[in-house]
Image 1 (cartoon, one colour):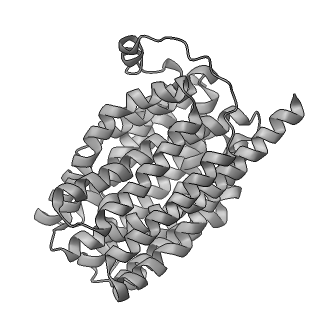
Image 2 (cartoon, helix red, strand yellow):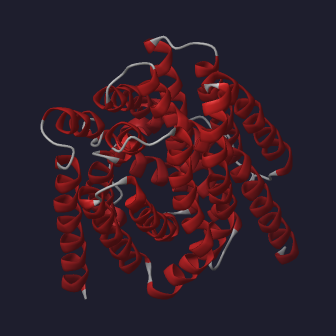
Length: 390
């Protein structure tokens, strides 16, 4: 039994790691080029925020159902589906620039993100018994290896060949990784697909997990704070600082290069000091990031906030995943991850549009300054609750 479980764990870590590299290539190209593509089409920074807001609404509506399906039919089918939606997100802008289709493309990308995280995380948590922080690090390092290499290359090629061919070829590259994952990964637990009451399950999907109340509040504030400016960041570099596409891509590469360089160390740190301390450190680095973006005088210094983002994310990802895994039962783990994504994403829906409006109509610094205030409050709340509990 032990050997069988070890084999499943090793196989799923490999499947998720390979999938992560191919998926990371697609995500890197979409995140780097899509905002630049919109600016190139003549849209404003606020329009990028509006698309991010509009596309998130249908995803939030679907996410409670996704959590139910993850626990009912399995982690693997839903994770595979998110690979297909990432493929679609890249394919659409390769042949059309019409606004409704751009919204649809971003919606597919967003769905792939918020449904992929709970399905993949639940799959890995079911496969591993100990050292979850290190295991999560192993599976997301390849994702950020791709994100360190690809953005600069994608930006450079976009300057030469245009956006459409890059989106097209990357969509098929993403499909290769999805096919590999579908055939190589193993569902750790055989599920009895008993009849369920969909209405009852949907109602339960909107009930907060008591064991995770402090993480709900932290994740919601964190998500809103970052969404005020993070979806707009590449558009800010292009329009606000006058960078070329290849320069913006290089900055994205720096961010992910930083992340994957220290990812395994960060996973070990999470296992050693615990999730709450790791989340607080991550949030503190988010404050430094937003602060540095308000004071950088030119594009030469834009590399500094990208390094801060990379370190922050390297701690956040394993800490967030480990905390949910530790405080949820195996049978309902898919719902636990999905619930967290439902609440933190739903309440942050207006953030990109708010940030874009403040950026274009008041000052580019306002979204960053507001984000700093929220992150500082977030650290204070969770640290106070931790000390009070102690």
